[in-house]
Image 1 (tube, rainbow, N blue to C red):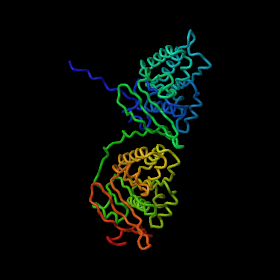
Image 2: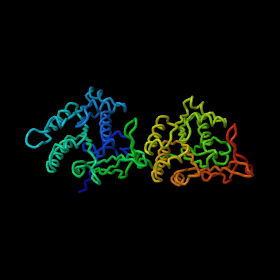
Image 3: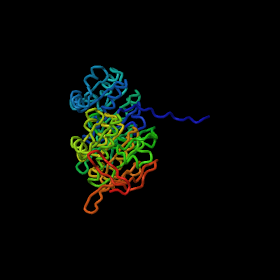
Image 4: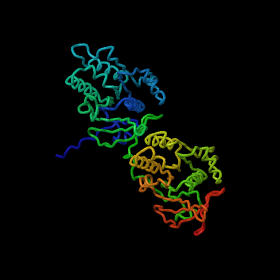
Length: 471
């Protein structure tokens, strides 16, 4: 008799960007997920986002809350564009606010969950709910007495939910030390356990998510950065990227005719990543601006991430080289986003880059310079950030150019050297009390290129690569 192979665990998409990639599909459908974390880490937001996404997919929901009223919750999430009152009015959502201090959960003998289960059953039946959220267990647990009763009643609650095939998210406060929760709930009540962490390192807030367990399904086991922004939760799993991005033989001009002539195919492959490295004042930003100028002239959309100059300053400075960026901004082809890396954590910068790319859908992206990220994270974290950016943009087939300050290039270039397809080094050269500039191509994957060191000049009509031997 052939061996019976168990069916894979069904998943319910969470609606949280990146989380479904970590869990290979989302929440365990018809089972319970426990989300544990300290105050302010985003547990309630995580829970609400999964419920609202379920409603959007035709799965009505019930939310049981022991701390915030429906009015308070509605006000808190209105900034994210979620209208809880409208969902309630459309009979897609029921919010049951249980004030444990005002009314007992049970009325005979020791407290139990009988009254809560009655209310929960009525609410589920009222809207035909397929998803349930319970926020937070600590208030409920405080009314249940000792460990034996606690275990029995929680098993009863979660068994009741599972018997009705309800996809459930429950929040709980993080325990002390190595304990995931204050009462060890993760050991016996939940099919999936997720921990959220909000810490401060070097005066910058850092958020991490980890899937501790997920019965019947594989999942990512690392800590993953996440942010809470205008669109809610966003998790960035490196597992969601891979070496499966498409490639092409199409070539994108660099924007500098002389540099194109030094490359066997007269430009970079579309979808490739280029690093332009050089000392201060060597012309890195000029090459980057020429690159986006050429892209916009072809009618392509471009995104310029400037980490040291405002958009107005970049436009003014490049105009002195005859590179007119303002016309492309006015035409809607070019978006310049300026920000200081020290204003936010690495995770937040990563999410902002994703949001800008999603909003503008550029064919060409410039990050100028990436060097400043070293001031807000350890080398390993910076490497993870850049790896995610590179893989993400390659996945979108965007042609990307980074600049790096060569005086401090070790951390950036070593961090992403295996990810970068093309390297161009710029040099400031001093001779006979005169300063000039030179460049050479270190590598250009998949194409022949010149190995010469060539001089170049910046003039009011652009960037000019000088003939061999000329200074």
